[in-house]
Structures are given as structure tokens and as C-alpha cells.
Image (cartoon, rainbow, N blue to C red; front, side, top):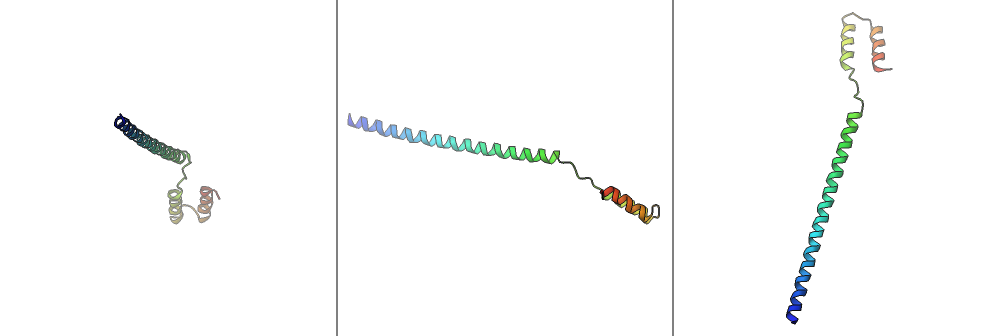
Amino acid sequence: MIATAAMVAVVSSHSAKKGAQQQAAADQQAATQQQAAATQQAELAQQQAAAAAPATPDYTAELRQLAQLQQQGVITQEEFDAKKKQILGI
């Protein structure tokens, strides 16, 4: 009878340890999933912010074209300077 009681206690203790290990593993998995979801949310927010930000216009091509026109004598230096200030907003 004492041997049976001792055996039940050992099995019960083993089951409790196994249950605690399973719970710890489940908790760790849940934490990992939460961290992955937070990372995905942060990346999505960053992508949305980048998409919402106005694209900076590229004036270099237009300025190069104006410089060529000025060098060819089609427009004067004053006209080039005035248009350049207008394009750059200065």
C-alpha cells in the first residue's frame, strides 16, 4: 500500500512537471508570436509612412535642359537664373 502511494506521488509529480514545461513552452510560443506580430505592424506602419510621404521632385533633368538651352544661346543667363529660382522655389 505504501509503495502504491509512493508511486502515485511520483507519477503525480512527474505529470505536474510535464504540465509546467508544456505551459512554459506555450507561453514562450505566444510571446514569440506577439513579437512577430509587433514587428510586422512596425514594418507595415513604416511602409505606409513612406508611401504617404510626398515624393521629392527631381529637378535635375529640367535644370540640365535649361543649362543646355543657355549654353546653346537659346535663353540668356538671366532667363536661366530666373527659371532656376522658380524651379527650386527660391
